Length: 171
Image (spheres, one colour):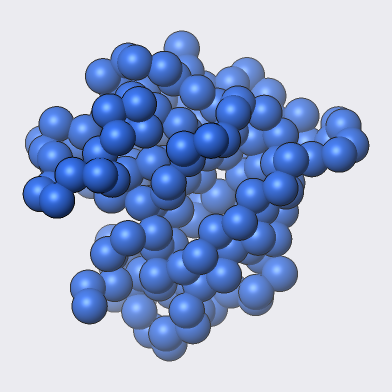
């Protein structure tokens, strides 16, 4: 199985051999308050879809047109999926205390883009979570439990992600 199949975490080793693997992190690093933002039917996530603040969340998940188009129901890979543009990645990577960013299809950047979207996050020490199924998840605050398979020295790790609505205000 390819380590980038289904839901998976990527560390900076995804870009550089000397980078961090998800296995280098403690399991507790993947239990956190997160904010899910919904970009609706937009074909691309732009700066207008990046929240100005996370109100205490440490993770940011993008629910996009990938969910509304039901891309996970497709047997074949869909190359025109919704992803972040570089200005959105640059803006999001500057959010205070952001430790993790995720999206609802196989990559946070479009196949036609250079690695700049990944670089903005991974170079800032922000883990990338790709391949989420966000059907039934509304915009708002959640508690996330992400359970990656511990694979030493791997650039990526398949994982299971659970979300629970937050019962208290984070900020």
